[in-house]
Image (cartoon, rainbow, N blue to C red; front, side):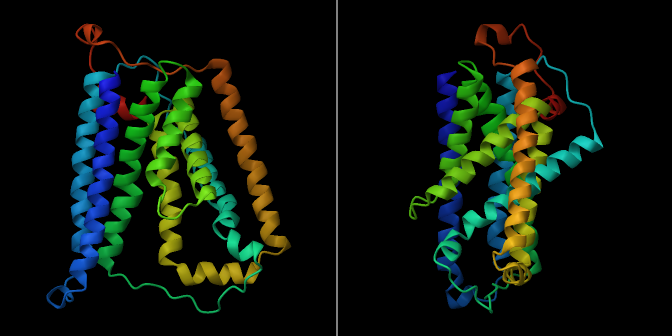
Length: 288
């Protein structure tokens, strides 16, 4: 089991090393005269291919390693709405932490915001990589694999370690931003308890919804800052933040309370038991 965890961590580290290297390489390539007329979206396709390969490997790894006995949570529109609301609330309450310098130093919100121009191809590939492929792969790895592995010791350890690694792998070491690390950890924690309570599909939905909000803010950057200037971190802004915070704390409390009372995670089997157990289908991987 430990060897499998180490292999998984190394595989994830390799993925991020490759993607970051490709980003830096693309920056160098795009400044060369002979590449100025090439759409940068084509370079993002490489990351798409890497994600698809890692998704395939992850699914194969899970089918070879895990056995699941709990029943799948039925498809429920109310539950889908709940997960979407939690993701939106989280994006709202993290906003003041992202703007902490402006708030604490009472800086003036700039009237003009430079919005980088991106082609339709670049935006489409970014949407696919961040909102769809990235969300699915990260939930498979951090929740389905890491959380289940460390859950063999205790549920708390599984949630903590998977959330910690999630925050660590997204953390920019170059800029020591503790509040960003804490936000990423909390995001991982929420995704973990959603996975434990409702299953992988709903954890992916939570992740996708958050990334979709991020993507919409990115492509509507000017409109977002116009809204911030209108609210100007005044009473209305903080009422929205406080109400969102109270709501998400209440919803998370209800989920955690149910987990403590009723829920237990499936665990991986020893290798000598695998031969006696039917391997889960691909649909089982995502639904349970």
